[in-house]
Image 1 (tube, rainbow, N blue to C red):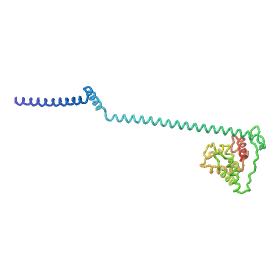
Image 2: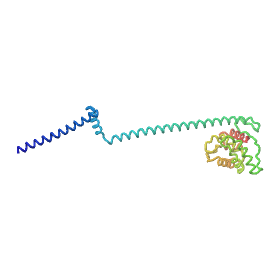
Image 3: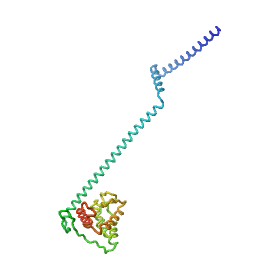
Length: 266
């Protein structure tokens, strides 16, 4: 029994010695390889520490942080782009509004000057009263005896000459044909377009050059024919003080005076 115990102790000692030797050898080999590559003991220690720190990081945490950072950056970029677009749109709206206001003032100034011309013209048969009652004028009569083709041909040319350079340029035929079909003075609708919108240059509704209600149309031809028909149904054959009072109650005298002056140019 004693022999066996001694033998066991000896065998354990041998095994432990071999293990320690192997471990020592492995460590020595690692140190040798590190030295061969130019790493000193301090570098190895730092590397080991970094490896331990990396191993202690939760692998699920880093991607989440990266995703959060990317999302935050993306949101800031989108917000900045949207702000730039909104600023440009606002600047464009202000530019358009300023242009419209300038055009409105220009038309008002032209209309005021036209009114002064009307007041001094020899064609005026009456005199405006202090209360601003409408003027009375006479216009050359329209010849309805020539037949449709001759009528449309003559008045289309005259209206086109009057509308030259305006938004309504080239639509003399539509005005003339609509006038014949509805029995309306062919000069009336074109003249109203000047009074209300500078011949279509400033329209508050699409293709509505006449300031006529809340109407809007998709094209000028349809709009012209609808307006002339509306004059026939609601106002009669030609302009009158009564028609002016119905069409433009807030400023009847001026509306009547300016519109009939424009009719005299056609």
